Image (spheres, rainbow, N blue to C red):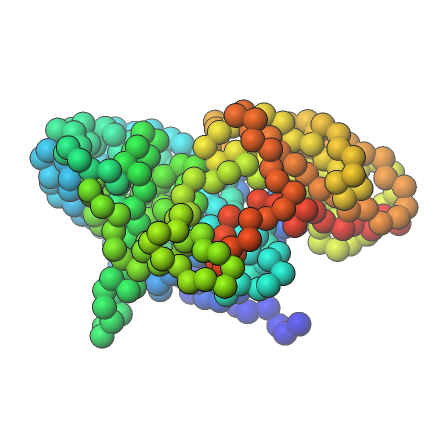
Length: 366
Ligand code: MSS
């Protein structure tokens, strides 16, 4: 392996020792650094930007940032300052790239080969979208989608639709959505979408639009390429198209983070196996752990505070391990009874990998 790539300037404040730099716009958290106290520190949180991040000058006067609200009875341009006067809520949620786990697909789909680290559990503060909508007279009739548009400057000479980060989710997602200006207790950094970000709890990363400059209730999904052809669940070998399902709600998933995931052998004897579990739209009901690659399972214990159904839960399983090789796996079940599957759902883009078998980890005990 070559020398680790340095962190690009816009994330120069992150902790390089915790991160794997795939490229300047794709950076993941190392599995072995996820701790057991629920929140992922901002310095360790992954980064995925489809376009280069805007100039840091957009943070110069945060409250002056403007967003157009459309598809409501009284459409309006609001500033972040206006939004801050409309109300505040806080939501903890799993932010996870749609391609997290792509690195375990054997056929190597194109895209970043993320392992577990294109995910984190973070806390957002902002105003609930439904309060903004109510203040503007409610959603106009016939609007089936909530469409958010990113505020990046688009590269010259290209069809804007081919590059703009604009995504639509079902309008019903407004029930939990936030227009957020704070992450983990501080104003949102440029890298994570400051000054203002659309947060759609339970939905995969790409639906959480950074530098959001337009929020529109629309009759149709946007025809931006990132929606119409990108991020589709396409059959292996096929190209993305609008007839295929888009990546939207996350489903139940868990993985083990430690100990031993850094490759260092464990000491024989008592060990506390820990990891994270989340249900996407539902809370997690239970997590089972296997020490033998999934032949037998035992119930793990949830630890730490429960920050709501969109957050992950940490789990711990106390085991006494003799010397040898072990394949550790975890399998979560959500409150609706959905069980994390053994196998990934094959798809050309390598999206939505929730396979417990793919996320199992080999450790050696000496
Ligand atoms: N937004 C915008 N504006 N831009 C871009 O690029 N990306 C996506 C989201 N949002 C973008 C946006 C993605 S794709 C993801 S994941 C996310 O974001 C991430 O986040 P962070 O903060 O971590 O970086 Mo995949 O599904």
